[in-house]
Length: 429
Ligand SMILES: CC(=O)N[C@H]1[C@@H](OP(=O)(O)OP(=O)(O)OC[C@H]2O[C@@H](n3ccc(=O)[nH]c3=O)[C@H](O)[C@@H]2O)O[C@H](CO)[C@@H](O)[C@@H]1O
Ligand SMILES: C=C(OP(=O)(O)O)C(=O)O
Image (cartoon, rainbow, N blue to C red):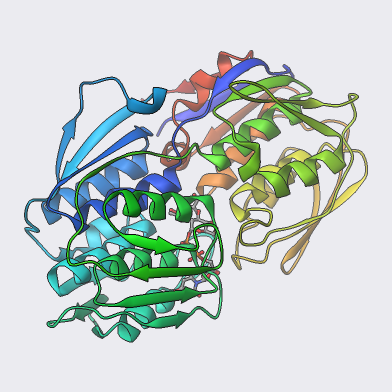
């Protein structure tokens, strides 16, 4: 298995371009199931998760094409066409769904377009149990009959879905996205209350509107959707990845460097810039994105709690913990979204970090230096937090299980080494 080898201690300097958001691209790709016309997506990141979903969509009948033209809107990056003239299978098999939880996002579009779907339950994962009860309950409220059998969700709506008022007891990004797509092809009005407000949800809503959907309340916790008989093709540029942006901002901060993050959008990172500002990190908007650096060389410990957007994202919690390991003073990090998302703590401790975990909170006492070590992690953001720690540590760090990183970071080692990091991928065998 490939490894990432890092020799730490070099401040990152220069500029680094952020790609399209993985967590926007995945639901956007499943939205192509809602129409028999072509959905063109620009800024599609090149990531393992995108390939996994493309394989699943291909067996549902999605045909992929590369648009040879330059992206519209001046955007850079890949432009992909997805066309689903016919749904060739309404079954999402276990072998494909188990590789990635976001695969469950085919459920809403398949039931809405075909009146039937058989989708494997995604199962638990390293960061928590992650049930899909809210996705299922919402579809039932929209008229679907759902049974669970042999590890599969069997959904049918022979007369189509109808609008409903759905009140989420907890904020769920995936359930909001699944029901938003289903509601776009349902009969009548659907209102989603306590909906997720993440920029990726808004990006999906924007794309659905471009496909002919009628949606009000974008960016708020109440989405009102008037269902349409059919949707049509559209061209959509995927929003820049705020988690990739935040990760590289923290890479600049942890190394005491100074980076310009091209395509970085401060408006999607306000909770993060507020917390990091308190720690002594400064952000300055530029024409292409923003610059990030330590304001006066020091970085102090700050407390943070993860929350649904616009709160501090759980997908940046591990990276924040790595940062706090080398801050002046102590920091308390509380994880409120997932019940088991501190697997990076013992690995960071192997590098000399002082971390005590009590339930949903971790107390980090900053140390002047970390030391390199062989480490590994069981999820995507935990893995990248070890890369950040390695960039700041004395000596050599080897991050194992690189496939986690490849799920969410495009050309990570290339982007970081272009900014002065000593980092390389060591190929297996
Ligand atoms: C592909 C994608 O976009 N993934 C993101 C998405 O995951 P995902 O959409 O899976 O996360 P959710 O927002 O649904 O989960 C939030 C919380 O709600 C719970 N829950 C969710 C659904 C449900 O039916 N029942 C239930 O209890 C979950 O277990 C979790 O505790 O949002 C998470 C929270 O910002 C991010 O960490 C993930 O990176
Ligand atoms: C948890 C994540 O992704 P997923 O929901 O696909 O597991 C993530 O992007 O950090």
